[in-house]
Image (cartoon, rainbow, N blue to C red; front, side):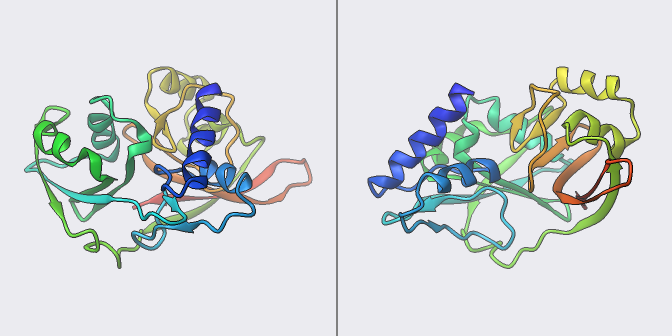
Length: 230
């Protein structure tokens, strides 16, 4: 909690002195904006429906787009894990995009040379990365499958259990084994309650976005909408 508060306050301070924020997930974005109600902040647009955003007031951020080339199929969580394993903060990493077996990620430009020199393996697969034009994916649009389910609460272990058809103990084990990523960071709390537009991925099961609560049933259960990335 203290770490998250520091991150929010640090980004607020950066924006107040005219510097851009780091990459912010949806929750962080809302918290930062709530503290800057009288400041005209702009979102640095990279492509439609981007998940992680950068805010700025005067100084535009410096962002790079990399393409990953591999002879093997890669998974989102493996790309994320490989980058974070190099002690790179999630705050420096933007969206990871997989489009028809093409792999891309956004990152703050200060990491360009480090990544070129060090990111050559993802899991046990050899890769080559190249920096490409930042506007290359500006027209990219994500593809989703839309679903509705009934759950008893918004606890993430409860929702994932319902989505996958796996008992909650199995989901708790996955969380303990660091197999669940929430908003680009490893999930550590099974009691976390999902918030609108939270993005989570489960190893071997794919990536999802919680949209919102649609309504309640007569038994006071929740009808929720979520998206599965395809």
